[in-house]
Image (cartoon, rainbow, N blue to C red; front, side, top):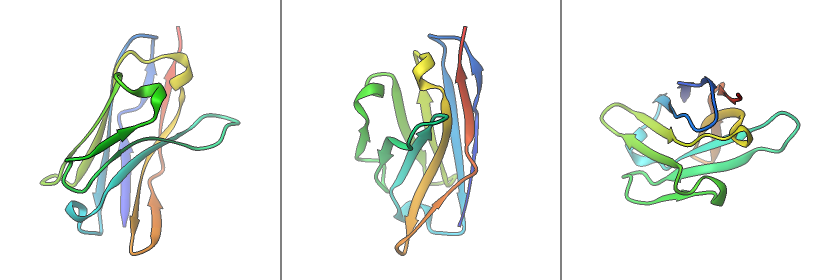
Length: 115
């Protein structure tokens, strides 16, 4: 299982970013995918989750209405569209999947929101 995130960067408050997570090594279309983030000195938190077919999506309260999770099963990729970014969104973002009882995550991509 391999997960590779991309799309992070430095943006100003109110701007947008789109993160991508390219997956390989498992049958992507059969598994739910999650986006997590971890800010420096803080615990990891679940940001968004999407079911295997994309029909069910869930978000943590602080990002509802601003973030959108989606997936393209033909491209084995899950996305996180982040709008109206705020300084408190600053963190390393990574995708995660549980395959046959084992959790896998990518290396993460840094998102920094600062004026």
